[in-house]
Length: 63
Image (cartoon, rainbow, N blue to C red):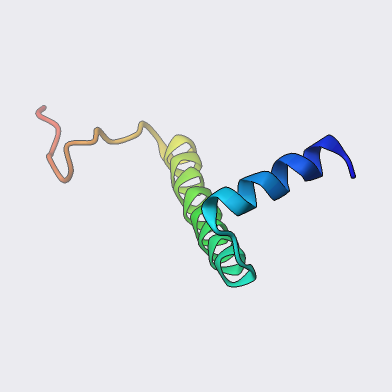
């Protein structure tokens, strides 16, 4: 068994890993990746459409 697998097995026993918990964590991480990708897409669209708005919400710029 490789050193990596030994470390993984030791870690699994420490945290009480189960197949069900593993599936849940994978599902949650997949959702996070989708959310992060959508935020990056919004940033890229803002860059191509003009200057990005400040994080102040819907405040209008003074002329």
